Image 1 (tube, rainbow over the protein chains, first blue to last red):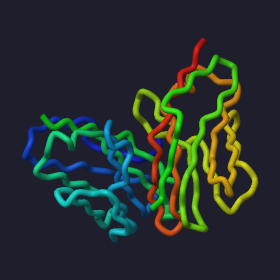
Image 2 (cartoon, each protein chain N blue to C red):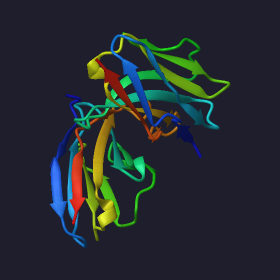
Image 3 (cartoon, one colour):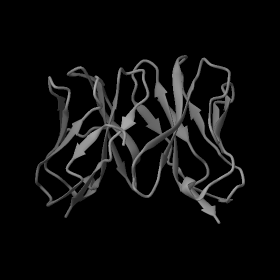
Image 4 (cartoon, rainbow over the protein chains, first blue to last red):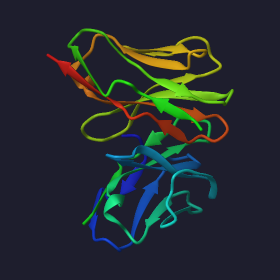
Length: 112
Length: 114
């Protein structure tokens, strides 16, 4: 158990819908990262937050957005879902941007 | 842009034998970190080993060790005394020292034969 929690574990929804994935970092960690793992794209970095502020952006679509709240938990919002958004979404946390990252168990999103 | 390449999509090793997984990377950063992550069928991402680029000494963690060749931009993982529980996908990753996000390779699927 890495100490990073993600909810829900599984999510099945339809095209065009909007979903929210939630992540609670390890106690004391200020940095949160979101990654997407799909069969065709592999593991890709989406976005990073540090102590509530966006710090880096990767290959995140405009339909996707995220935020980190004052209690340091983070949410990833995916809207206007397409079949290609089906993937495993990981959240990771670290004490600072320069420390090793610990991954949560992931949220499996299936878009039908 | 940073890239990480794993040229072996699949590898196989006999239980108790040694296997080496290859990884090359490309970066213009002077300060960076390299990692190997293991992803078993449960899909959990587990950190296996970490190497800081400014350290010349190769990192080791029990049966896992790396061969870090900075000039060649090579970062291979050696697993000694392979166990059935080592069967998994292994991902090589680099981290930009200035940002912190990870760039992953495509992965190598390791099978361990009893």
